[in-house]
Image (cartoon, rainbow, N blue to C red; front, top):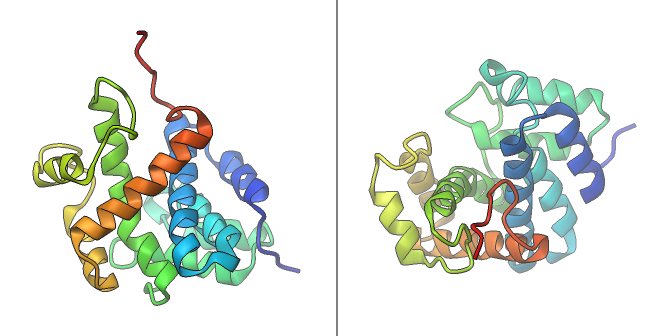
Length: 198
């Protein structure tokens, strides 16, 4: 019997397979960003979008060389519904051994935002405020254009993701940033980033 994980179950699964704080935070951030986009594009399935985003890198810490392949096995063995597995693992299309090309709007948004959330998170760590709340699209684009900054975050994937969606880069950044800001407000700060003392 398979099931679509609740937000709590998705987070628990993420934590069970990932011990490093960064991977746990990244999963939660992407889940929150996906929930944000769901509010506009698919509000009745916001929890589904959250589960897909939260679990997208469930295998990365343990099986980085089998990313998006090992994830299929892990989530299948955990009884996760195939629709969640397909959508979560589709973000690796063309980069890992993922067998799933992003096709639905949700999958295309995950593909586009995954790398971008990493870039924004890296930018937050460099800001005096350690916060997304005082960031804007212009400041994110400045970091995007500096290819030496967070070089591991693929600008080509982000740009290709925006193109798949038919969105401008500004539109993609604005929505992703808004989702991260919602997450930070709900958490009372960005997890994994030490806030400087006043």
